[in-house]
Length: 444
Image 1 (cartoon, rainbow, N blue to C red):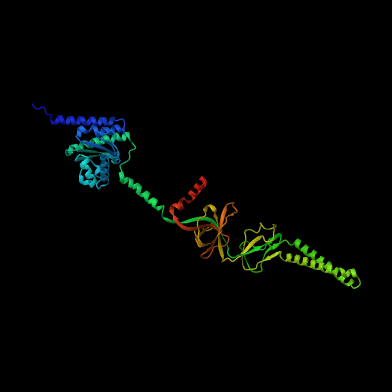
Image 2: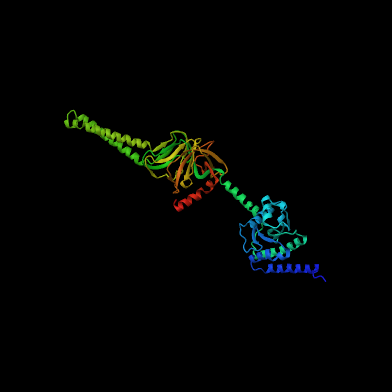
């Protein structure tokens, strides 16, 4: 009577072993314990020489090894072979099946002959969405049968479920291709930082007269009235400003009377000089006194004639507000307004010292007016001040002057000027201000 097991008995033993492996996998308390179960406990079921657990392209466990060395030849071979198969057309690692040598590169085929058994079966591990996050490489001397593939596929489902329960954050397997998906955009972004761009800066600007004539106070006095309004057209000879002449008229009248008295005394002494020696001696003194009084009279008359300022050319009167000048005492030479040709306008820019960049002569400028921010006005840089000055807002700024390339806007309008400098790498353009702030903060 034969004692060899019947097919039914062998199938029952295989099934019992299968259930035992599933139970051990589900009972694993850690991913390390589960990994050991995957590559060792199923060896009696499949009769393989060795198995390797691969998670996201990295070998996590090998048959008979407590902790696989990352740079061991067999580990390197498995990872390189999986990377090759992951990148191959048809995605052979997404399905359970036998691995053929023709699917690998020459180096991997050579390593296979020396490091692994000749027959290999790949069993993928998948998440709930059916996306692979790893797999098991089984290798043995005997060819793999269809029944082996079915058993390996069923066990892979159990192993996947158990693994995700222990490490729920396991990502989908992108391996090196996934890395390149991240690396390529990063490299492209890094390359973009070296793209040359034109450095530019924004600064407040005002349209001012070009070659205008400054109208200054001709004397010390109090302004009585302005005969023109801001930006009003004037002609040569028109009255612009009137000073209070009450005091000057009185001074001129007193000077005139003093001159008359001095002349009368001089005439009287001249008549007495023929008979009186003392009167003759005083003639030189009285003549000098007459000359002095006449000079005082002429000076008072000249001041009185300056109480009205007249336009010495055609143009427009450029000043801010007449009301703030009425009744205000001014000193000789104090600026009151400017006579300008409306067709000749320039651009005055106040560039904050913190925004200063390298600018060349004739650097392009684009002006956007506050009253018309859509329409740009082209200009070119003419002059840059070497020293900064304090602006009315209290900031330090460099004064820049520009000339319009085409018809200028109305004098007195304000806006924002965009000044374009030299070409610099995009990284310098983006990080110039932050680096400057950091440098000042740390004292470099």
